[in-house]
Image (cartoon, rainbow, N blue to C red; front, side, top):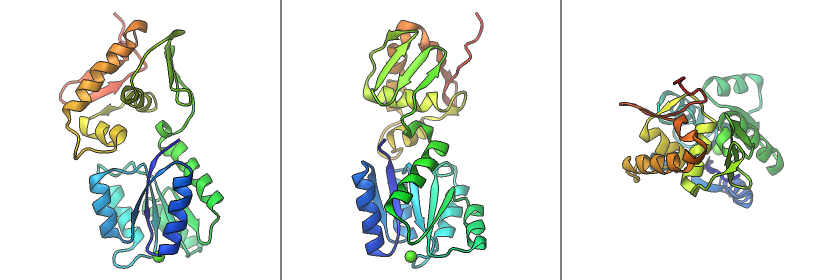
Length: 232
Ligand code: CA
């Protein structure tokens, strides 16, 4: 499981310790010392998860958490608050601001990793290694294998990621911009047309077992993966 994680922490030693542990676990790490830097990084690339220190120079972590939750683009990004504060009220404030979890300093790297994994499993199942099956279509994130009704299907890496995202977010319509953010991690430097190209390839890969029909175009909005095919 490899995700892009943004660490917002103003204490260099703690930031370094967290970054080293995340890299070691195979994650891509983005680092910021304050809210301004964090926002600049988020504009360029939407992270899969944000570790956010509460006490920062300038705007506080709570301020950023609230902003992230009120913005359509960043609303879904999981946030774990890091803080030296440990009171019940602080915890409530953090969760009310939109944090998914809360971890009190000092914490062990092992505890941090376990929390990250739990939050991703709950909020971003496309980033976990769980096997998924929808209407006879089976996707195995560990072996990168795909089969439709027992028949092995050949699929490219980008189409695989796209399908993984769709199969963990059934029935929801996603715009091209949202798909670029969620699957490519970038809606700024990649053209929207790119999505259409990969949707075409995905349908082609699913054709042999008839699962291409699950990939629906929603005119004017984007794409959806449905588990229920219309009766013909
Ligand atoms: Ca701090």
